[in-house]
Length: 535
Image (tube, rainbow, N blue to C red; front, side, top):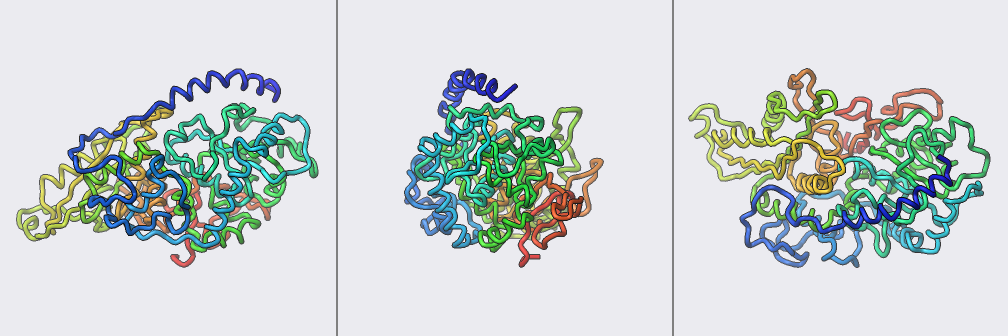
């Protein structure tokens, strides 16, 4: 379909989409989880200045602005999580650089100057309908992110896109029709990051075969000199091809810099490959002197769950986890399929791997086998285990084992699991809200055990600033040896990283180009950022 035809179809669809959006915008349930709470003393409308003995920071002595990442001025009642995040995170956060804080303030000003509803945005949107090439960009250039992945991937792709917008001086706008408004608060003051409903392109039609994609433009040799199309589609999904991956090359970035609108589809955390583009390296070093803090800072800056999600997460925390001496988060993701169907077990080898990791790394106490062993220890410590899984079986089994036998040191272990959906439900609003609430609950842990290859765990560790123990993926239903290992950093893994050396114009091992980009522990072909001082 030609561009004019696509525009016509798009405008015809707008009224129906608006009706759908209006239907989806109905208030969500206050309580997302299955558990009944017996906690009458907890005020569901807790304010930031309200004393609360059940939260970690009862005296409100925490840094509500996260070291300067956030600014005052937002309405707290409309988004409780923005200023209360630090209250529920006991771990010492990494300090953002003054330069990052400065650049965030400049980005906020750009978002407000060029955002939806401004004259600059309206002129730029009209330009999208032009069939003529243009000579370059203006003061307001845009990166529009098409949202389509699950919750963990969604948070990683938003953060990656924001960093790219920050590096290239673009306004970040995101897809309004993928429940973003019901899961995340607006991150920028005085403007919206949601693409307006009258956006003139039918962007959901774009895929790897679209002639507007950068990879196809390069392959078809349609790029000419210093003239640029009104927009370019960047197909950076896991199924992207060789020419799409040229996005990560210096020369190709120079061309893209002249395009007013970039429309991006991705489901990955592509930040590690940005660190390998020469023109970005100095700026990234200034933004992140501790290189392995990209998601930690940007995720906490951008991603603030809406009130219903935050209420469910914090109320569950205060009910079951706040009084424990230690909270051990265990994120369990099973990668087993029968045909196209996901299988979550029960798998005894996965349970054995969880316990072998937790007890072997002394994150949970050993269970006494004999009466003498069980009676040897005598202390009053309580460890709360927060288990997250699509299946209830693993949490039930851990609870049963610690409930039937005393531990060798006398520690009491209690196991909690907020929900068990049994299988991942795509395009399900409540499922996504539960997932996000559990991600933030996991990030409130003191220590974390995560499942390799799972973006759910990546996000929780990054928000928390915790270096997790990663459980390696079993093969042939056999527990790996060792069952888990400590991660090199708190950064997520880029699963589908390219392996093309742009300068040498040949395939190469990009995990050996610079000391701070390495191959991932859980995905041997992936890339992740590590901090040189921590190697």
